Length: 82
Image (tube, rainbow, N blue to C red; front, side):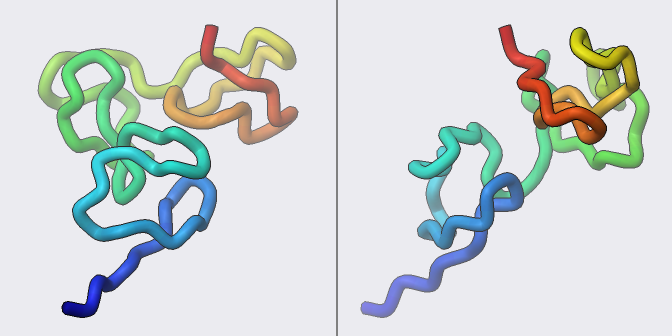
């Protein structure tokens, strides 16, 4: 049976469509964005999670600019995870 692969939205690696994690970048949401607090599906255009109210944009600790919580800083590339 053929298995169709889909690119991870974070790193572009082709992975099985039923994967829950990306084996390349270890993203826990390879096909969409989710709230880090409640795992509800979110869109990058939203400022807060509609389910729990978690802020989805935070200030980068390196440059201070607001960037989406689930990715490296969009301005300086710093890793936002602790």
